[in-house]
Image 1 (cartoon, rainbow, N blue to C red):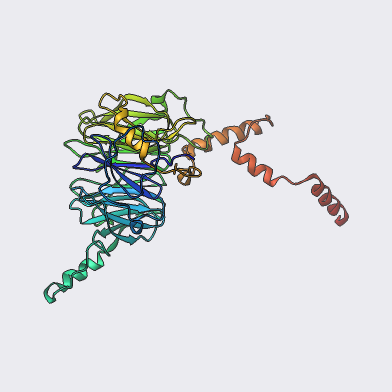
Image 2 (cartoon, helix red, strand yellow):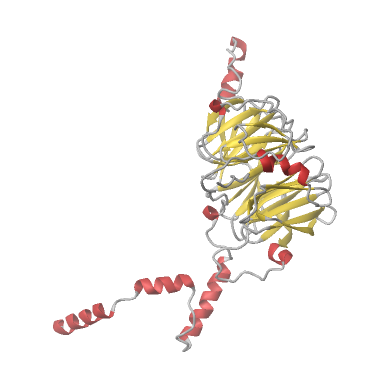
Length: 442
């Protein structure tokens, strides 16, 4: 039976560890030696290849396991807490010392993005219906409730009102969110190509929009640097864009197809390349861009002075990547959907982007779990509506229609028009009946 690939990787902000998710489970890995430190599932008995396995720091507890696939993860800025949200609309808060689940809460809808506030007291979530909520981390059961005294009743009531507070909404599915380091602004993206910059936590105060993508936006990240004024975005239109986000100004469009040496997409193409995720190494200003179902990862160099990203390197993987993350040492961890005949789920690259097999050997040998069949772990299909500008589609269809009307009956129609034309076609037998009926009436 195949091994279930790791769908997400996230690094601890202050320690040399990463967390990988696979299905309902999590594993914590030491990035210095690759040893698995903690797991929510017992490691399966497989050939250890002589590995000396250290005891796990905790024993898996079935009571704290997720019941559905983990979709999003986020560390608090100080690294004391990890928040996870799964397909069953349950969010969990984990203590990152003991790796025990501190509490759970039911979300209104499935979360597509999580982020902690600067002080770690709140968790912000963006959901599939486009709503963004600001939630106190310690509600309902992360910390035992304290009985209020008479003098602080008013403050407690305010906190209860803030337990799950809607702060903004999009008219379509929210896809990602990012907070600026000073927590003054929250940046959200959606399925309808929009990027919105709002004040935090008063999200109804909209600062500006960053408009230019022609397909669903998948990722938004504030770029590292002294100014903290630039935003990186990726979308389903085969572009990566850089914005001066408080002005809503696009300063660069990076074409993914050009970087990969691929021809432009056809005008009537139903889908284009989509950015799956970004990983940013702040110590060397490198960005790893994972492209959905593309076995090559783009390594970009961020130049703040020039306000642009440039292609630094292309990494060829042994399968389609699912996630990538830089650790604190600058090593790039990648998880993949292996090609047929391959078994490794994780590859680690050093600062020179050379494979470090020793760091991945524990996870590749002992991590994950066997499954009957691997589920579909690519998630942009639900976001796709169209992948080219509607103006271009309209122009192409008008040109084809003009050619047909000019005397070229064989001029090709677009797929949509061809389908509509066929659906309206009246059978010959029905036409004959209608003609007979008309003659009788005359």
